[in-house]
Amino acid sequence: MKTITEIKNSKVPFVIIDKRLNKLDEEILFPKKVEKAKQVFTKLGLPKK
Amino acid sequence: MRLPKYQLKSGERLSSYEFISEGPKGLIKKRIQFTLINKEEIYNLGFGDVDEQTNEFYDLVVSNNGDSEKVLATVISAVYAFCDMHPNAWVFATGSTASRNRLYQIGISKYIHEIKEDFDVYGQTEIDWEEFQLGRNYLGFLVQRKNKIS
Image (cartoon, rainbow over all chains, first blue to last red; front, side, top):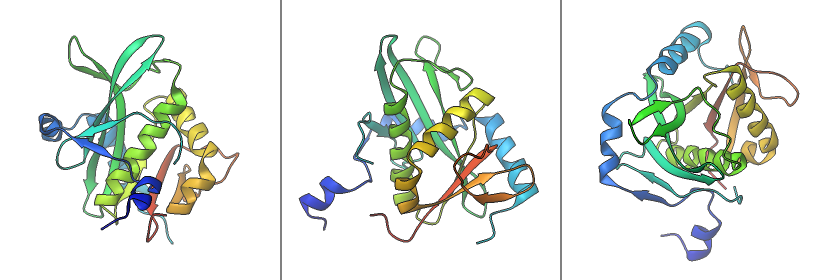
């Protein structure tokens, strides 16, 4: 379990969970951007580490 | 990041977020969504304003509510939250317009040293990916968490 200090200094933010927002996951909010992103990765793949 | 940021709200999957921008133009609801685009755990980061009258979504405008740095810090914090749940995920972002892409570039450049403490950061060129470099113009941006967030 994290200490208060660790929580306070963490870069991972507190996020309020609101179950009413579950509905946002039921649709793609940015369909054009998702399609564009798919094209980018079809063309380039992932970076070579 | 230790910068001021807005409070994020999310559903239980931590894939879609909302926050409220406050400024001279009033309260503007904003949404962020991480959408899986292929089996390699690559997610697209989408971000835009919500018209509360129509519940329509706009990712082509720059709302200019005087809080761009706070909004940017909030979006970056959403990336931290999402990647905490999905430590192997790649997160891709690009602006819907050239001006929005330029804003993303400026924001990433400003905080790149801190971001690179926790993420590998790549810029998209016409033909390939490269490690993000200051002063270069990129078409899109890709990050993946390093082993452990500080």
